[in-house]
Length: 165
Length: 109
Image 1 (cartoon, rainbow over the protein chains, first blue to last red):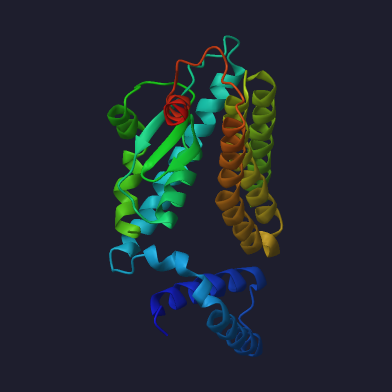
Image 2 (tube, each protein chain N blue to C red):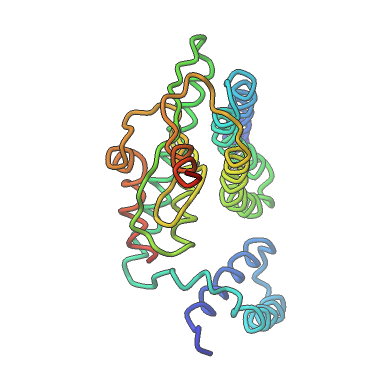
């Protein structure tokens, strides 16, 4: 079992999904479900290569909730921002596509970053090429890469670096 | 609990309404996607959580649903945006910059 970490992470994800969906803590259910989970994890963990980017350190206990909180606040801000733009009769938009550099290497990390960017105020990921993200920005404040990176992705990237590679 | 659930459902419907209004009002595909993605994500989250509050046996399941929506919704919008950009759907005239288009042109030359 060379990809042991992938196996563990896969097992945790599947187990959490199953537990939340069934919501049962009956002894028999847990026994049957648990063995089924381990069987599934043994059969399929080799396809879960994706999870190798997940870091397992004591720090994540703090950074996962922090990321969630930052993300939810940004999501709320995004919605109020878009709602205000939509109801404003003048439709104040200033759109454009800008490039953003990221230092994250792994596909999973980039996926999480791109998803977070899509759900935050006025930005939508259009394309990802290597370490460059192309982002549609509803209200362009900086055209060059540095200022766009600072305004859009730096907030998430700081926290994401602690969670994934 | 019932009051909180009803308020959440109300907020969710409000955001869904604003999202659909945004889809009508915005000038091009990308701006429409912006309005569509964000408003529908929070709207659906709030609506589902409200139903979970009203019916307590659904609460945990509604949280799982919310996680799946948050994970999948931005991916689909991003894919639509990427596909329309690749097939050459133009940005609105109000747009001031398109780095991606310059990039593609450079590769062709």
